[in-house]
Amino acid sequence: MDVVRDAIDHVLHANNPAPAIVLNAQWDILAANASAGVLFDLVGLAREAAEGLNLLVTLLQRGGLGDHLSNTEEIRLVAWQRASREALNNPALAEILKNLPAPHSAAALANELPPLLLTRVDSPQGELTFMSTFTTFGMPLDITMSSLRIEHLIPADAKTWEVMTKAYEQAQHSQ
Image (cartoon, rainbow, N blue to C red):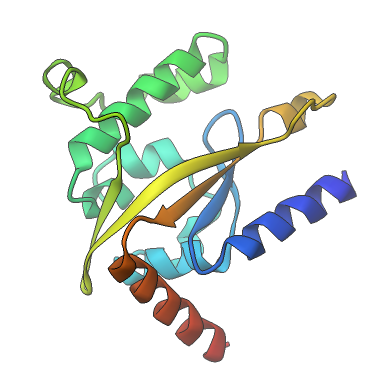
């Protein structure tokens, strides 16, 4: 598994200054790059909170990352729908979902979502816009490895690239 760990570390580091997180099948954040911590810092969440959290919990429960999104309901709806589909074959994830609030306007938004949903984060620097992509392992032979995925939050506009690059560079110099 060292080769897998090294590959994950490489992908996370290479994604800077854009945030990236490693998720397991229950949406637990297992690892994050420095820029994920920078993003948390920009919105006023503890930098170290980027690791050890459950992404569904921080998106769906009040007081988490979901509260810092300008398109909160859309993101919560998409996360809920995706997790609900995955929970059909994942009892542990189904248990997590049972304890989380369902999005309020699920039916109303379901027909209004665009083909690509951008994550819009409210920050003191203004709205930061990200496109989400996922990396998975091709042909995994290990069940643990098959459940891992890396979410990349790629800045979707020049302003977001600029803010993330500057904040990442400042964080690197302050270490």
